[in-house]
Length: 357
Image (cartoon, rainbow, N blue to C red):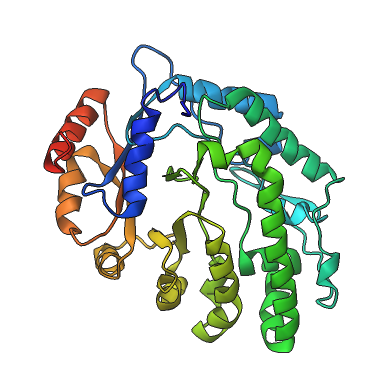
């Protein structure tokens, strides 16, 4: 039996998550992470911290974050390895370009795919500096965090987003019209690389033993991930169905439990297609900057169409959200709470209502 130092009741939590994904959990998943009393809380390393910092430093901070926080309800202690935007293009030999912003450093992979004629030449550059940096980071998590917390979400970039990263957005848009067969050749090769990447990472993540956790805290005893097609924002249903869906289906077939990243109002036109994939169980809706209206009608539609909801709520809102979306087959609530006592009281109440108490 696998155990986690940061979650002694891990077996119970695993069983609850199995019920969640199986559709038999009658209450929401409750995930609450709060500082431990009497200690100075250490924040988790920010996404991409390993771009500028040594792997040892990043993992040590992740360990201190876990040590100084309580993971309550159904929360699984985790931290997601990350280096930078554009990493998966760089792992194919691309160059990373820094973009200085007022808040810090952003990055991108400089597009490098000049022709669609020889996709077999795309391959993981296992001798390159970026692969070495990435493997060093994973090895450090494995060496220092194994058995303490789950280190993350091992899935790489997906379908047209991967394609646009190495080809360039404008070129990718034109390719859909100018060379559709070439696009399919490259997308098929990129899917092969996704499979290869997952296999290469397996000795470090050991997701067949420990399970895995998405960057939003969804735990699976198998391989989970957050498939997406942000590129879908810029294309219509005909192109989405022709170029994204065949590879999205293949990507989803690689995963045991899926939370889909639905990003931006332009992607709502693709809901029929996305929702047709049966093993997409939960939708993470991201409206985009400035889209602050009440999204209750959309959440209601998602739930009515048999997909689960991922919502952030205050602890005093939990029961209200349960009443608002009783038809949701699954609900994950990231709960903001002040202390462990109020979370424990909530869990006792929910489990009694569910007939578990």
